[in-house]
Image (tube, rainbow, N blue to C red; front, top):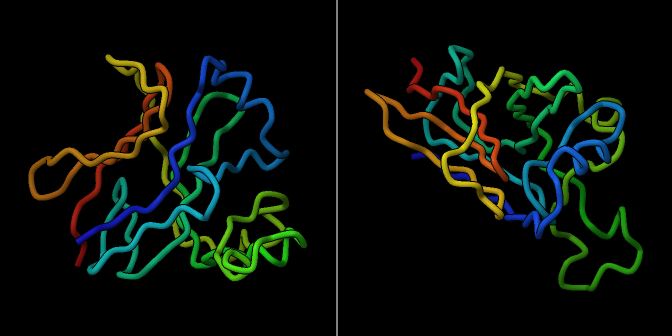
Length: 159
C-alpha cells in the first residue's frame, strides 16, 4: 500500500515557468501546497530502480533550471508551523510544514532518494497540481502534472 498526502495548488491562470523562477536557490519545491507532502509505503519500493525502505517520507521535487526534474524523498517529516510562523493558530502550531527555505542546509543530509523524473506534455492541462499512479506490470507509473507539463517515474515493489 502506498499513500501520498499533498495539497493541490491551482495555477489560476498563472504561468508555471514564472512560478518556477520563484524557487529558492536550491530549486527544491514542496510538491504541494501548505502542509508537508508525504509518501507512506507499507513495503520497500524502487523508484526508477532506486530502492527505498518501507516508511513515511516528506516529498519534494528538485526542479532544475535546465528543465530536469527529480523526485526527492526525505526522512525529515517537516517542521511544526509554530516554529516558522509565530502567528500560527493554536490548532495548527504543531502541524508539520515543509522546509520552505534552506532545504539543502536544513535537511538535505536526510534525503533517502533523489530520482530523475521523465518529462512529457500533458494531453489535458491540469489547473490543479496532481499526483497520480497508473498501474504498469507489477508496479505503477507515478506522475506529477501541472499545467501542460507532466513528470513521471516507474515505481516497483522492491525486495
